[in-house]
Structure formats: C-alpha cells, structure tokens
Length: 305
Image (cartoon, rainbow, N blue to C red; front, side, top):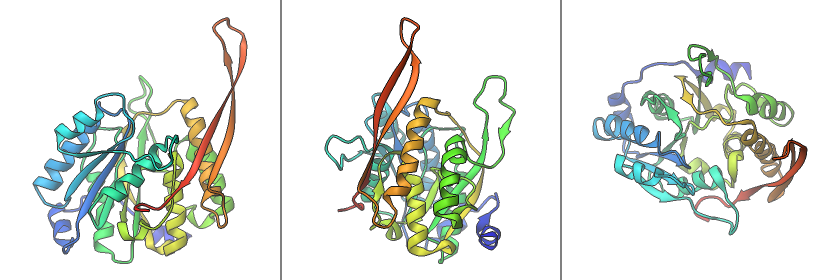
C-alpha cells in the first residue's frame, strides 16, 4: 500500500487545460452533477465548467445535472446556466435511490468516454477541481479511476480561517475507515474514500452494479479496485473544498448506507439491506421519546440494464 500511495497520490498543481484538451485524442468528456435542492450553488458550478472548459478550451464536451427529486429551483437554475438537466431514474418502484440512483442515471445519460462526477453543493468552486481529476486520467493509460481529496474549512461561524487537513469527515473516519481496515485494507491509503469528486473511464464502470443512496461512492471504489486492480486507481489533491456539512441526523443515515455498501458488493452479497435505525429525542412536551426508521440500501442494476 505504501508503494501505491507514493506512486498514485498526485499533488496539487495547475494543469494546462489546452494541453489536456489536446491529450483527449478524440475522446469525449462528460461532467455530471447529482443534485437535490442545490439551487444556491449548482448554477455557479455549471457556469464555471461551461465557460472555462467547454466554451474556452473544449476540454469538456457536456455538462449534465441529474435532478434527484428537488423541491427548489435546482433544475431551472442548472438549465439556465447551460447544463443538460435529466431527472434521476426510479430504478426500483417506491425506492428513493438518492445519490446512487442519480449517479447511475448520469452514467447512462452521458456520451463521454471519460466522466467526472462533481458534488453540487460546493461553494467557491473552481475548474481546478475538474483539471486535477482529469489530468492523470488523460495522461496515464493505465488508470481507470481518480478520486479527489482536499482540505475542508470548518463550517462554523467565527472559525472560517480553520481547516480540517486532508482527511475524511465524520462518516469516513468513524465508519468507512474501520470497514476498509477489515474488508479492503489495500484501500486504506485513500485520503477521502467517500469523496464525491471522481473521474473515471466509463467503460470500466458501465457493467458494475450501483449502490443506492450514499453507499454509491465507496461501492464504486471497492468494485473498481476489485475488477481492475489497485494500480489502476489514483487520487489527486484538489486543494480546498468549501461546502455545507450535514447534520448528525443525516450523517446517521449515511453511515448505515456506507456500511451496507460493503455488504452489498461483497461476493455473494445480498441485493438489499434494511437497517432499523433507532434514535432518542425530546417530544413537544419535553419528555424523552424513542424514534425508529427503516433505512433501505439496495444494489441497483448496472447502468443501461
């Protein structure tokens, strides 16, 4: 793992977009953003990619926003900024497939040979994110997937100057890393295995099942490493990422979906995992109450099937 980390961990840099466009050698590049209620940020990201990498350099050929049941103006804002907007497909009737279903839809809809997934909630977005992910994929034919990592400023008033050094968030450190240590120790060198910023060769992931919800990112990493080998994967330093941090309630659901992903993509794993999540809180009368909810994480068919 140490040798892989030294060889396949790429430092922050400033790749030349014109040189990368020349390195495409006839290949097409699609940028895909899964989005749910991200009207405040998605337009800025789409505009930056279109003006800086589509119109100016021709490095990116299309920008797709997959609208995942938004209740705000996400679709309208994204379309006005120049994205092709498609609704997230409901693969399983009655199941909100969340981020996993949105990324699956993106892989189906894109016409690029190479894809770049970007989260739609990033503030102060710059096209360096796309350049940093694409540069190794365009210049090294042995790679099929590149994960991003970054420093993350504290989202706390008064602490704007403080940053978390390169490393994962709470679900990464408390849930994903222990599971990686047990089930996939060869992946322990990934700085942020749950990061949503990733570039990939479409043909390398097209026939892989997709995990619903927030299990999708780790499932993609696990399956791609298993299929193509660790040396076909790399990670790129993207600098600094400013985004909204989810509350503990949302992180609790995410943690269950990440845990379920390891089970779903294991050899002879199940097609669905249903977890009963129990929480305590206080009711309107101030008394402690017990609440339960079911969290369903499902293995979705490969894109196009």
